[in-house]
Figure (tube, rainbow, N blue to C red):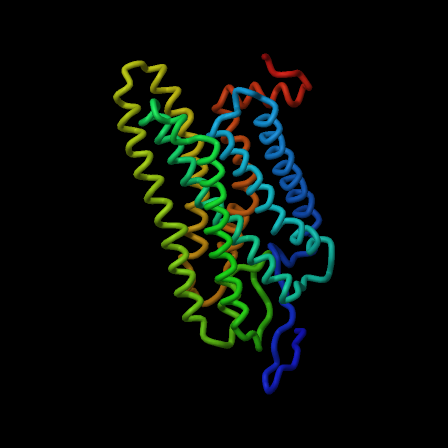
Length: 315
């Protein structure tokens, strides 16, 4: 344990991340698996971005937000997985205190922006299906930039607040984190000072950035479902639901893993369940999102095919 002296207290200057496993024989195998997952995620999301950029039919608000979501997925997996890969092939499992805070900040910045962006995408679908006559006016280029910018600002404010609040805590005892990245619940357990204020801030953030967006998403899709059911054409209903089904799948994965991660604040110690949920949240979800959005969307599939084969889109 690396401790630094500060007055009469010994303060932790670095943490030890136990990672996914302490079994040496499994670490090379896991290294290959997560390296392939990382490469697939980066390639898949940048392919989506290339398809959106090159295909004129995809120059719409829905795909503008999807492109932003792809960038967030690249950032989200890059915050956690490269460090985890380094730990797989190195005997050094430590992470410096400031590096831990930095990882925490960027993780919450990207995850928070994801929350708001998924809400914006639900609102976009509501306008497109329920208010089609005013859609182009109400979801113009200026509004798209404003909604994306506000998502970043709100998330940045929360991430900075959580990080600064955490930096006021003292860590003067155990420094071993039973996880593969730094996050609030695990760090709260190691603090030797009161975390009551930090937990209250996290609860408030969960309400503002988790519960409120989820309620707005559900309300938006309640209106969407009601509008779609009024469509007489079966083909029209199918097309409308197909554009929303992918988004709802992503919302379910994102919120399902997020809720489970932070509902265990009162637990005494971290468990392997936390690591499993962490993998779903930081690795599996960003890797699956390009597949979810492309498999059920013929426009995206066609654009991806042209990107991969080098063919120009039709004029």
